[in-house]
Length: 197
Length: 197
DNA sequence: GAAGATACGGACCCGTGGTCCGCTTTGCAA
DNA sequence: TTGCAAAGCGGACCACGGGTCCGTATCTTC
Image (cartoon, rainbow over all chains, first blue to last red; front, side):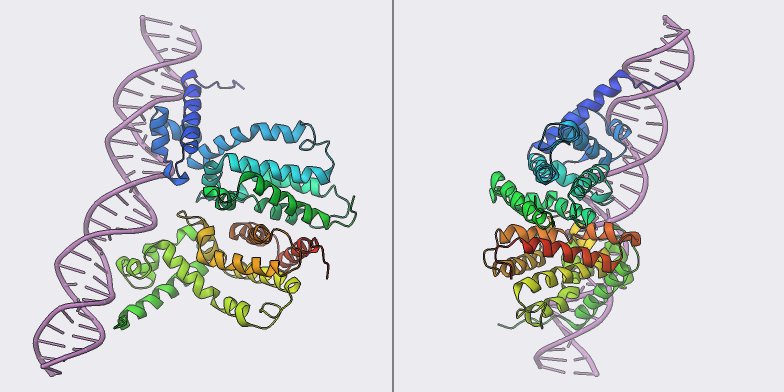
């Protein structure tokens, strides 16, 4: 197969769009305030380009999200403990959730925009499936741990973007306090497994 | 003060709208498919009427939700155990969450529409505040239970409409299985309190 | 340099929430 | 019963955001 290469200006524009969108989200705008037209303008590009490159709004959001997520994904899949695969499950689970929480804290608007995206629940997103599968498999490495699938969902629900926003927004709960709360909570859930290490 | 009463046709229309909206949500439509114009038509009423009565889409949703919630609220505030106020905390917490779960299962589209409503996070809604406050206060009746506020949020997050939909949708997880999962999970969280009863 | 493929971009379309204002209905009072 | 405000009605209308389209500009290849 001829392996079509994309034109140089095309990829350049893609990056410009990504960067512009990133900046807009970072820049204090409320998520729904970031309109496609605004992104296009900020990137110095026409709307058509933007839609051709990413399909639709959700596509753009997803692309941004994945890009931001890349380092963490790397750390989880092949990094050192406690995030990496060599960590014992009881340490790795809290580490995973802490990583997710921090990510959402650092990318509040973006996560918010993605999870609130009208079309399709956030649970169908590829990255959610990944996190859930990972968390579930780690939970199930704990001998005798019940309901790994449901528990994984329940724990991830704790880091929902709008909840994080609600708590952290307007500085009501500082970052470290929130991480501590989550850690305590996760510990409590894990403590219920029969074979306490 | 003269205490303005609303005209008879006004209240009649209001009920017609509520009923129509209820029917539309019940009738298999996807939540965002239920448009304001559709509700108006189904109720045999003009859009203006609808907006005058409820302010905006969110207002209509809220009104419907509150109406549906009324019986449960009643049961929680002044009903018999295990839901009512005379139940011991360790029994009441699971009962509360089970009630929420069942409610969301029975009103999937409506809850979905309300929680996904673009403007304003679901955490600012009055009914959420109520549930959270209630759950929190019950949790804090358990001696030595840590982080009642956060835990209440975390537990409620487990019953988010879109998660429920994701799991229960298309019959993947049957109702009773889900209730059982949630019960197990809640028990695990409660078990972490120092003074095991 | 020419030709074909690829991408650009902004005018355009459509559906949705929300507003507005001339007309109808209702309730009260004479 | 009749008159008359005021409350309410309703659908044409508006704003605005996502998504499309196609004539034109740009890149790539020969």
